[in-house]
Image (cartoon, rainbow, N blue to C red):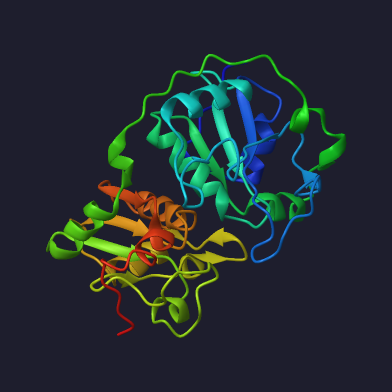
Length: 288
């Protein structure tokens, strides 16, 4: 049976229709409960979509040498870990998470940065899959989530324009045709709420624009494309180059995915995000 390819987003109905066909790889990119600790050896989440394999954003698919959370690993590490998940160059990848659209967008962006074209985020994630009545399995009982699989032949190539560093952000803040958009909540953006990470200043980069990622979602799903377009057009010009930032580079990718759906093509994610900028005293911070 020929493979039907999807990119960017896929509905639960569409995923269900291809779940056992073609070179499909379903990835669970969930991270632990925000603000809470997952106990050692605890399976998280405890229910998954059948055939799903675990995309470990906080382990194998992060640069563990970096002092900042969730940063992109080396191309060599990413390729090796992707192969261990059975991913091939021809694979249709569908990524989801247990919140709706949250950390799945980060995994999607990383595959895009590695040049893989056939990758999509599940609209509404695991909650929407369950709401629509599709089958789930206990994670500890699902062979696909933990078992050793035949290694794939994934040969991605890293495209550095997908990620920005602090100097790129500094230059973008000074440029008229660039916009830096911060996905954090408004109270954090204006320094009215303490940062969850120790040693990180409160506030935002002077000249940055606040667009909380939660404003793009309704019940864990993206609002309509028309609404997304309105949200972005109220903040930036259509010709702007966009750099997305957040706390640690995860929800910035929700903005990146939404901007991509709206037709923006010059998009980058600041990998260090506020975890880095807020710690570096030589970089300015404002609460205004």
